[in-house]
Image (tube, rainbow, N blue to C red; front, side, top):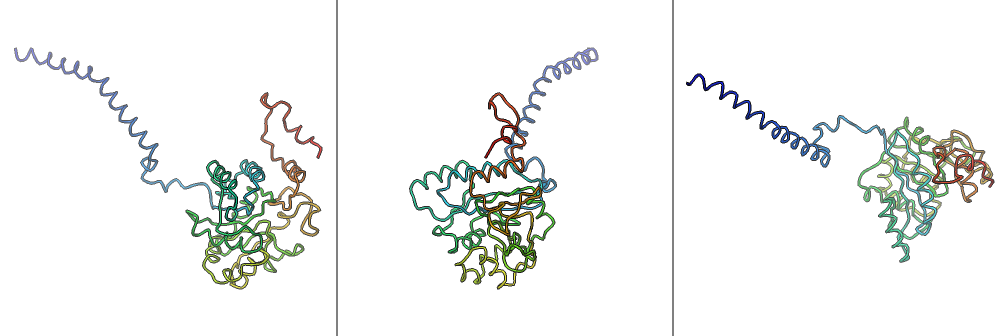
Length: 311
């Protein structure tokens, strides 16, 4: 009797396992689902060696465009211009920089812009051009930014920068003691002769920190902003690495004598774009809208219609 019961017991075991198998599979699937969701919400759980997957970006650049609070429409235009650009070489962040707000409508409209774009820096100063705004910009950054950048640029709002050529030109350069831009006077090719034009010059982060801590710029901040930066660096014996990127940086044709020349393919920056027809000329020359495709959603708008537009 005992021996005859064993096969029946084994068969019952198998039936029990087969009966519970769907429940076991469901439980395993549920556990996998829970773990997966935890990993998505907490990416660090995906790997204990996150550092093994570094960003492909090789350096970081902050471009601070010094402008005025009331220039809402122009900021929106520049967001379009730079929003369609990128570079695989660098993490490039663009911020619009101005001094304390003075009107109630500014506070409301700027609050909306910040909520939507998060690309505003408001400095603790009175709005000005040559009375210390550039000093306040650079000296404030180490205290107000959440992280440092390899490079920081001060830029005008009438400049068109091509971010990929800009990043490519910075890639081989030193990450410290660097002063980069378009050297003044216009005819000079020597980056040590004077100072970099205010159209857009770049300092490495160590120089930004030096400006924030040194008495040299703190006690001499009033005057032509670009000229003053060059003076600080010379007095402080800083910026041993200097680069003037001519002819890739220049003023729009016919706008400023020796500082301007015709548009060229390897352009990094075009300055003194004061009118819409000048901006349109630049946009068409560099084929900025080349990714536009024909669609029934926008009747008659295509690359040909843009290039045949008469200014």
